[in-house]
Length: 137
Image (tube, rainbow, N blue to C red; front, side, top):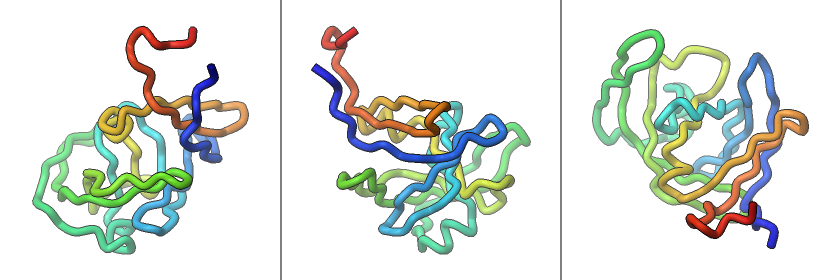
């Protein structure tokens, strides 16, 4: 039996990164970067301000460039017709680079989802995670 896909997101593979649009709080945030090496969903300060994300407390975050001060927040995410409410995220006011933020692995783990990135078709597919022993390999 084939897996039921929750979403198929078209993006762009550029400079060894996958950029994609993400629907957050009913707005489309372009140029999110899929970063499975990052733990949290992280937004730039500019994007967080546009989305009016609440400040839920300060947090130090570590990156390649060292530590920086950020704040915890939450948002609603949409994948096709599915909505995920109150998803934890971090806002980094000094977020560097071209993207709007990083989409880390935590969301997929917490929501029990599996992802499949096809770099040829430049699409990210999202599936419900299969239980141990139920894989259709």
